[in-house]
Amino acid sequence: MTVAPGEPEILITGEAIRRRVEELGRQISEEYDRAEDLLLVGVLRGSFIFLADLARALTIRGSVDFLAVSSYESSAAPAGPVRLVADLRTDIAGKHVLVVEDIVDTGDTLAYLLRLLALRGPASLKCCALLSKPACRKTDVRIDYLGFEIPDVWVVGYGLDDKERHRFLPYIGVRSTD
Ligand code: IMP
Ligand code: MG
Image 1 (cartoon, rainbow, N blue to C red):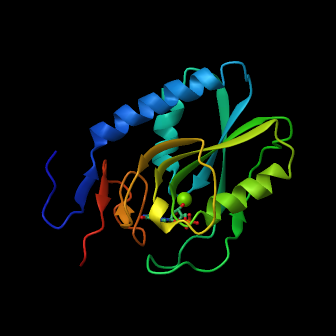
Image 2: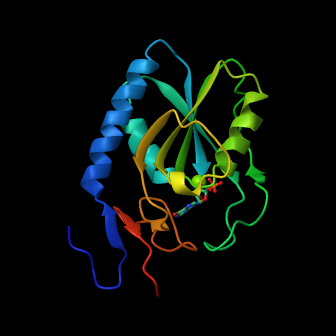
Image 3: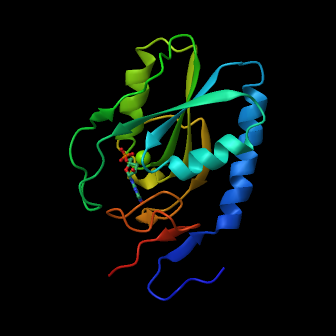
């Protein structure tokens, strides 16, 4: 794959993502084989491409819903406590819920979401994240299914942005310093 001048450097190619998402899809399908009611909960907006690919890699039936949380005002610093800005439309009581996140950085967002959703009485609650930056963790949180561990760099593409830029890149790149 060639990268145009000025575009972010490739960290994970589209092909490597595709292969890993296939593996995750296979693993999740096996483990939820008996759960007729798997609900994928996408965390907007960063997870939209990952979720779309993951859903197509599953061989089990399921449904999908979305929520949105307040995100960083800028890539430099967190905007403060996590806040739910759009809630699910689905009642998750008694359902098998799999939260689908783009990236776990400090862990605050995922820890908050898992706490919030657990209160609603799902049959099970797990999470799948495409990326994790373990070096940045502040809040300990378990990631049940993980695509890739990455170093402490700001990444873009495949749904992830830098102030709304670069979301549509078909690979994960490192933000260029411009
Ligand atoms: P956390 O609460 O610090 O774990 O941050 C999670 C959220 O911050 C993610 O869901 C992303 O929306 C955003 N984020 C963290 N690191 C990156 C990055 O490297 N690129 C793009 N978004 C990021
Ligand atoms: Mg996110």
